[in-house]
Each structure stands twice: as structure tokens, then as C-alpha cells.
Image (cartoon, rainbow, N blue to C red; front, top):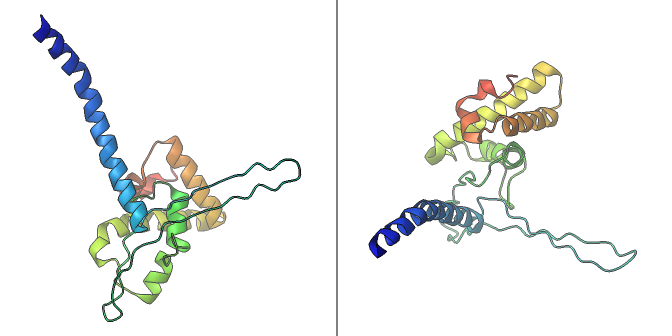
Length: 173
């Protein structure tokens, strides 16, 4: 009887522990991305100070550790695996994350910088191209097209990876 009770408890706990293990693995991956500077990290603090007091918002970003000597080639940028939304991808692509150069600038200054990351780069690039194409064809600004793409991504419950593999589905109603 005790043995059967323990088996029942174990059967109930096992799915939860499996889910917890996956959550912990994702957490560790996200923390690695944050501490290496590949993922955006914003910490917002607000302070209450009474009437007329302006509430400041402080943002702290993690920075990548370069740690190299002056004689070694500059470290290659690896696109962030922590970027999960189209606006964050757009930001990484056009403006850079955490003080790193934008993808546009890297393309201009260091052709081939993504050689060890070609598949990931190509999928993200296809999303950017689809947004720019839709903007041109629809007479929208690129930023409006980007926000429209994000709305459709969220409504369709799609990931950036899915959109990179199926870029023609981004703007299909």
C-alpha cells in the first residue's frame, strides 16, 4: 500500500519536474544571453517622491565581455537568441543591442561577420526583408509595417523562427 502511494506521488510529480527542468534550462540560456550581451536587459526603477516629484526611470543594460588583447581580431557578433519579438529584432538589426553595432553597420563594416551563424542570420534577414517589401508595396512606413507584422505574429502565435522559415505568411490575412 505504501509502495503504491509512493508510485502515485511520483507519477504526479514527474510531469511537473519535467516542466520545471525545461523552465530552468531556458532560464540558464536566457541568463547566458543577458550576461554575454546578446539579449537586451532593461531594469526600470521608479521612485515615489510626493506631489510634483518627477519619477525617473533608470535603464541598465548588460554589456558583452570582449576580454581580448589588442592584437587579436575583434570578436564576432552573434545575433541574440533572447530576441523574441519583431520590434526587438528590428532594434537589433537597425540600432544594435547593449551598445553593440547594428546588424546593418556590421554588414557594412565587416562583411561575412555572421559566417558562423549563417542560418540564424538568414532567417532573421528574411523577416526584415519581408517587412521592408510590405512597407514599399503598401505605402506604409517601415516602422508601421514592422508593428503590423508584430501584431500578426502575436495574433497567430508564431515565433520569429517560424516567420523566418515562412516569411510569406507574415502579412497574409
